[in-house]
Image (cartoon, rainbow, N blue to C red):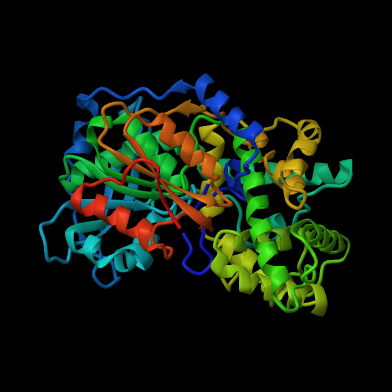
Length: 528
């Protein structure tokens, strides 16, 4: 999953057609699903910690000293560190990890390094800290911590996985993600196969070693190279899974950890995808209620409820399926059902994007102009003006498909599950169900499994959940807090994905006090 903000973006999940639905991410509030989550947690085995002593074969990695150099970004330095490609066979080769830092500015006693990760999987932590966290985090935090980020293996600057070129990705993103007949389902499955084959051809060895467990072990090497006894960390969305995994593997080295927009590591892929589907429905309901109160809402007037608004949007998607509309795109792309759906999903991550979505829907539905929704879709896929794509979607699939066995193994399995997904979201359910098929064609088998993370012996860990988070259901934060032995659950009652730095003084002050003074909030604290 990936934390994604449209204006100040960081993304959660997987997305339709582009990654494993490990994380398009979202949540519902039904008690049946909650009990299902609890049952899954009870059934899942716990992640076992690693031995405290460093194996001799890994000592050279732990004894590295970063050779800092100028990044070309004011205030930041960059370095490259090495980690073993395969921790079970360290002599088999290395992975190069891109690291950046901005040194503590003072005043006040330096507290060490603060690693940040924006989520994904596939989001560039280096890009995030240089563009946002290193300059936009609270001044008090930046004064006392070196702001640090490492791109996980396979991501952005750390030996990025590549799967398709720009024109191939354009075709891939336009593929019909809600097949109406067997031929269309075969076309979708073939698109997933081509995507997977492209990834396998690009990085046949690395693709077997981009798991979250390996990325968490890399973070411990980075911690040692920075000279810190403990890891201080803020992770958002998928970054919470990465941070929790680190705590589970190295509980004695876990310092002040903030896990914002938490994932539940005990859930298998199908359950994660289903609950995430419901989460986007929750977010769409909130958007629809807001939209119909506005003059000229394209989804209905003031007397229309969220259900009717959803039906109107679904009908519009159906029209696009038959007749895509122009966008003015220089590459000739028209707005298809699949691109429009992603455009709407993109705006669900941040309520600040709702006006933009409302305007884009108005232009598309009333003026036959798909430019606005295409722009939102492009922002989600990280497509640039020249038609190139960042490696976000490639890394997202690579990590998700390695971390958990596939949600579905065949189109027939998807068809049988459609009623559950459509119940979770009448608007998005069908697309999310088919998106969950992509890992079925992955060229390497999953090495991970759903596991509880307890991190017994770790210092207090702050888990943050937003009640109407579309990408990481609030219940996931409750579940993770229930698993971690030292967790403190901080709740934000509101909309959008993640909570820290998004406008709640209550949330920000609680997290700042924890990071700066070591005072975690009381378990169960609620903010609005």
